Structure formats: C-alpha cells, structure tokens
Length: 636
Image 1 (cartoon, rainbow, N blue to C red):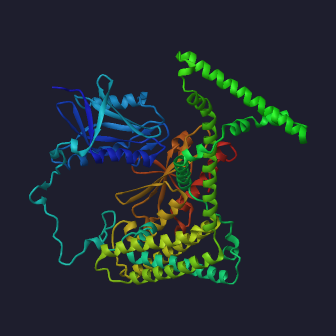
Image 2 (spheres, one colour):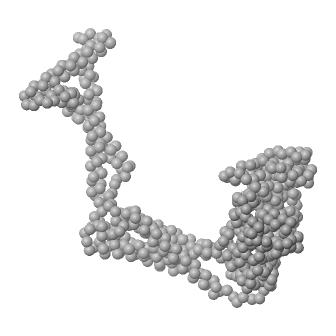
Image 3 (cartoon, rainbow, N blue to C red):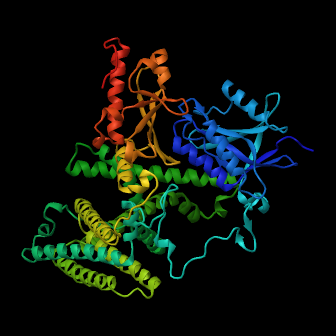
C-alpha cells in the first residue's frame, strides 16, 4: 500500500475557496483547513476548504487560526457527505515569493502530520504577482515532499459528492415542504439568523436596481432622450447655418479647420496604378530618349562650372568645347568597352555586332533616366489625386446644410420610433430585444455621421453631455423604482429574533456608516452576534504592527446598546502589560478575553458603531499621552 502522497486534487469549490479567502484578506496572511479523502494509490482529494474563523489573527507576516471555530466547523462539514470527510491538512498565505515553511509553520505541520498515519498535506499561497499554490506532503519525523496539484470536479469520483441525507430517486430525505398553490418563492426573502421568518422586499443596492433598469422599455426611453437631444442640437446648428455662408457659424466654439485627407491605403492604390500605367507605356517613352541629351544632362553641373563667369559668344564657345570633349571622351570609353568585350569573348571585330554592343553601353544611362521619370510621374499622379480629393470633400456651407438637415430628419424618426417601441406590448421579448439592438445601431451610426465633420473638442463635449443625460435618466429611474418598492411594502409586523431582524433598517444604517469609513471592513454574523474586522493600516507606535480591531455588537443590542472593541493587533496585553487590570473601560468576556467597553461613555440614544470607534480613537490618543508619562490615567 502506498502511504505517500503523489498528487493533490482539489474540487472546484475547494480551490475557489482558497482564492476567495486569499484575495479577501490581501495583503494580510490568512489560511484554512483542508477536508477530503486519502486514496490507497497516493491521491489526496480535497473536497472542502474551511475558513480560518473570525477570531483568527491576520497580519502581514503572521497568521494564527481560530482553533475553536475550526474544530467546530470541521466536525459539521465532514458529516454532511455520505462518505464522511477526513482532516487532510491546512494551507496559508506567505508574504512575497516565500514558498518554504517558517519555524512556526514546522511546529504546526508536525502536529497535523501526527494526527494520521499517512501524514498530512500543507499548502503555501503566494501572490507574486499572480496567484500561486504550492503543495507539500508532510510526514513524521518532519519531512516535506513537494507534490503535484490538479483541480476539477471531473477528476473526482461522483460518489464523493453524494450528500448523506439525499436519495437518488426521492431527492432530499426527509422531504422538503411542498409548495403551496400559487406561491412564488422568488418574490420572497428570508432574513439571516435563527429568528422569526418574515416576507420583506428584496435587499437591493443601487447597482442591482440600475441593472434592473436595463429592460428594453427603459433602453428605448434612453435612446429617445439621446436621439432627441442630438436632434435639437442639430436643429439649432442648421438654423444658425441658414443665416450665413460662413461655415464657422455651425461650430462656434467647437470649430477647428476641417480638411479631408485620403486614406493611406487609397494613396497606395493610386501610386500602384500610376506605376502600372508607366510600365505599360515604357516602349514609347524609351523611344523618345536621346543619348547625347541624357549624357549632357548628367554632366550639367560640370558644364556650369566650365562656363562659370562667361557670357555671350564666350559662353557658347566654351559650351561647344565642353560638348566636343564630353562626346569624344564618351566615344573613347565606348571603344574601350567594345574592345574589352571582344577580347574577353575572343571575337573578331568583323564578326561582332557593334550596334548591339553600343546599345548595351548606353543602356545604364537609359535605365537611370526611366527610373527618374517613373518616380516623378507616380508622385505627380498621387499629388493630383490628393488635391482633387480635398477639393471634392471640402466642407462647404451648402454641403453642411444638406447633411445637417438630413441628420435632423433621420434622428427625429429614430427617436420617435424608440419612444413608440418603449410602450409596445412585450409578447415577443426576443424580437423586441433585437429591435433595441437595431435602433441602437441606427442612432449610433447617425451620430457618428454627424460628428465625422466636427472637431475633436465638439466630440468630447458631446460625449460628456450624453454621459450626463444617461446618468440623470438612471438616477431618476432608480428613484422611481425605489418609490414604487416602498409603496408595496406591507405594514411592519411585530417579530422576534435578533436585533438585526427586529430592526433591519438600523442594521443596514450601521453597516453603511462603517463601510463609508472602512471600505474593506469584514463583516461576520454568527449566533446573533454581528462583528466587523477593521484594519486601520495605521500604527500606534513605529515598532508595532498596523492597528486592527474587532467591533462586536451584542445579540440584544437594541436593549443594552452594548458594542465591544477587541484589539487584534496589537492586543490589550501588548499595549498595557501588567497594568491592564488598573485601567478603566477594560472588561473581560465569558471566554476570558479582554475588550474595551466604551459604550458607557456615550449617551444611550447616541450610541452607534461609528460613535464607539470615535471614542476608541480618543482612547488611543489618551494611551499615547499615558505612554509618554504626560498623564497618569486614561479618561474619556
């Protein structure tokens, strides 16, 4: 039997739980417990990953489990499957790229490995900068072996997913209550906790309500508003344009000089066509070339230097002398070229084709001239096309009047069509949705056509106006929907249960106020106790860790108005040491843990989570003064 671990397979849910916990606590360390099965072939299957517990210690380079919470949850989770789960090991995050265990980790891993004859598995998570999980098998005496990791429900036998109280034929056992006729559970919601159940409107955030607004009816209304706004502006522009021939009157502040330019692909096409036409006429162009003229043109700079400073008959005489010399030298070069060719190929002069050799000598000069003429012809053709394009695409008042008038008519038609479709019956929803898309494309195309000839500043300004319109419409619709929801809420009935069930409005207000100040506060609700873990990312003293604390509402908060503060890092013992018993506002709970009881320093009708936190900050300032021996005791 193979007692080693060859590979660890995570269910999709288990692997996702590790990622969720990691990024939720980022950048602090965190961890969890692994539950699953050990197979005889060396495969370890992780079915469940338990959270670390709300009383755990989360710091940048240190993490400690809430042992009591983990033990309790592990016993419950392991028994919900037909094949009960076993404790396999644990995982935790390390800072940076550190993927080896510390001395503290060794002690924890040694303890877990000793719980099973096959040892345990232990995982390390790093974000450097991507999520990375490294798994080790831990055996006794302490020895680590890195193992492979696989993820996927399809890799795990189906029988491991069967629930203990589930029957394949009959479903859940015992059977759930049957639905009553006409009941619609989707319209109801049951509140958290174990108190009485009551029907309330669904909890909805602004984001949720805004998403609901994206019904085809509201989309059509939004399209109508946008289309009508653009139409009105187009009408205004058209009326301004009719009164003057000055194109700038259309744009006013937004105007910048508009010049149409052909695309680079179009210019490339024109140049290619010009090149093809030149090549087609090449024989006739080449026949018109005169060698002597080309030779003289090639040496025109030398000619200018030769006759420099002379005029009249002297210049003409010097020019003729230069030509005679140039042609004589070229004739001599031609003779040398022919002589070398005949000697190299051992051909007698009487047998040679002198005309062909003469043409071969002159060919490079002809080719050079043809290349120059071709490039000149291509450039000239492309420039003419660009000039003609600009002329034909120039934005004139007459063109602008025609385009703007057309845009006004089309936009008004599309806007009115949107208004009509907004109130059509929704018998064929898919067809209506396609109409939404179609009308949206039409309006977007028309707006793009209108903006094509306008300046960049105008495009930006138009975008900002449209964005503001959309925002106003969304807010107005949200207010209307919220008002309708409130109208449908039945009168509040008396109910029992925990305080957040009896007064959900107060509960939501408390949470909202805390999250305004601490956006990443972590909420936990258990056995009627509501708590928030808050990391301030500030230090009381340079040598200490960031200040973090637990704000805990008692289960009967409505009656006793008690809110406790448990310091997590640094804790009260670390701050006060042996003098902790002599300080006011410090109390001990049923589990023997110290906490700050600042509720009594606030008037009972003004107590809230944020008021207690403000008092806590005052306590911190007093503590700093006491630490510097400026005061003898902390008084609030």
